[in-house]
Image (cartoon, rainbow, N blue to C red; front, side, top):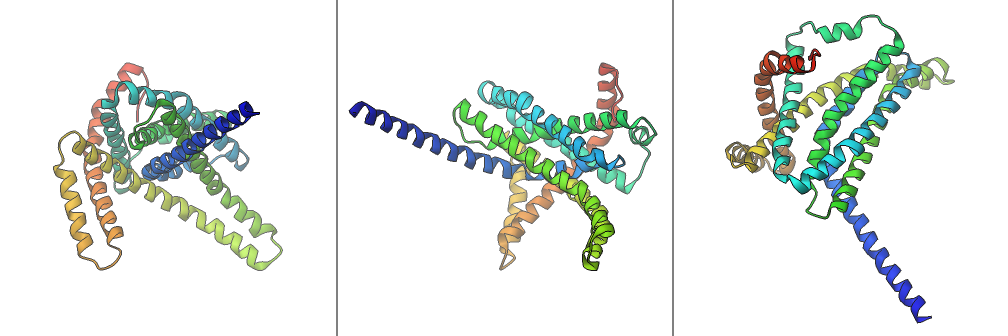
Length: 321
């Protein structure tokens, strides 16, 4: 009997340790997830564009395929790579973060430049040209998964950079929770967004009450505006997150001047208001990070399109945007 009681005590102790580990993983995952908010906004804003123009019945199956591709990107490819970096080359994390931040700045600035100075895009024209719907769907899904890989790499690296020092199993579990939770949040939101206009059409044409039909028509009119707003917010988030990553990376690498100046200006802004000082300080920091991101991205546009892009095309044999 005493042996059984001792065994039960051991089981209870193990259960307590496991419960504490679960709490630690959840806390670390929540912290890591909050740091990736800007990239998540961009991911949620970009993905609906891949299913527009296709049959409505294919929207959810396409999103499901993109979701599975995203999970594969994060769990099978990026999670092991992140663990290898963390344990064998941690000094590479900051440079890789900065590389991803520069890419976000380039992408965001290119969108701003295209909005201000519309120009033809061979890739867009090719994408919009008539082709077999099945082949178009395959191309859209492949393109979405490729874009997701870049954003997921940034998400996983950001998450890894804020996880407290711990064992490899703790890091793996935390990254897995972040990967699964973020993927569900992003693509669940995307699924709701892309089907809301169909819901509105159904309500407008089939609802029994005039108020419900009116609400349905309102949804149909509202969704294009929401998608446009998401696109603008996503672009702003790209520039803010990219600029913030680069400025913080420079500070970590020993060049803190820009980081310190922006924080100093944020402190001045906090002191200038009597209420919502924290929000004002954050807004000033985010705005200045975004301005830096836009400026750097505009500089990178000719570098990428005239130099890096052709070099990649020469090596791979494939055209790049």
